[in-house]
View 1 (cartoon, rainbow, N blue to C red):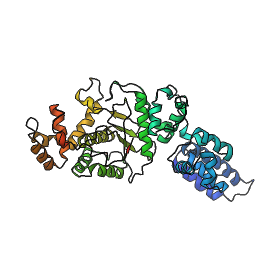
View 2: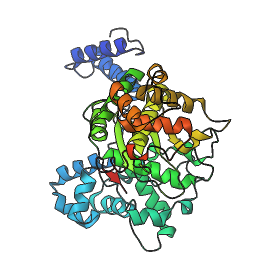
View 3: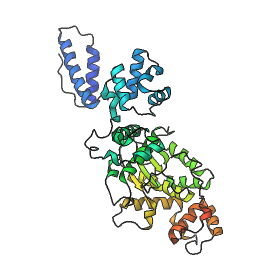
View 4: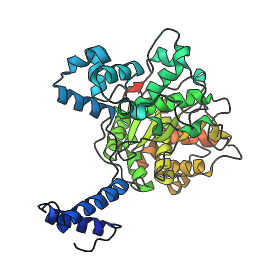
Length: 408
């Protein structure tokens, strides 16, 4: 029998597999057969450590059981519900509810731990055990269709929110830091953290039904890329084109109306799927061209400058730019810098002559010269002069929502 050594490296692993292949026809009771047995054990131990087999997703498990038992989607209706519900579950658009999980486990024999997967209702991990489920705005969420509308919804809050968490990507997707008050965030002091978390979960859920046309590459969101993107603002259909461009970059853009007490303009989040694709989520609470482009580029700046591979979450109330906190995270001002520079480069703004003598004709002429929408220049004038009543007709009010799908 050849000398057998531990498998510690990929090269050792390949050599062991090659030797196993050569010994496959060994006769039982021979030294070669003993060597084959020992090598097989060593390879199994190495692969278990370095290539662990993950449990299938709930949908994969259901489809496997359907194939085994020659079941059609209509055969799942007694366990899942209507034909539409079955279709949504099998396409990944609808998370399994606890009654569905129990029925599929009981009647089809699919292991409960597989069906639960990452869709385990919140409260089953140490990190979420401190959540007070009753503090979520259950009634408003049900009214909007974000969760199921059921009798005594408050008493079923944990189950209902658990389903939303599942549709957002599971427990790993929950941006738990948002549940803790952080004065460094650009976040209104009156913000209801549970409403904010609910909004972020809905934004993540909305991103999961989008199909991106490209793959996100870390480092691809640069200041130069944002400058190119800002040029789309000059187009009549700029917001729609921006969404298409971000999809090619492998970045989700979703618009979800804000909940009461969130005081929110936008957020930069990250999925747990698609290799951790970034999600730029906007509320469009101010449906204006200038607000849209600044919010979009600010959140993209967070992606480009501050995402480091973890599950990040930045949330922003841009009204606080006018009176920033002394403790505000430096990353917020860094994101402001990129957004402002991408929209109107500092050198060009210095030559604009609009700081103290702005006029409609001057704003329009300068915007045409630098290739952006007049709303962006008007917005910069308003911000720097603190005159938020000036040049309102140039802001493109009502022009963004009609171009982008908004989850109400």
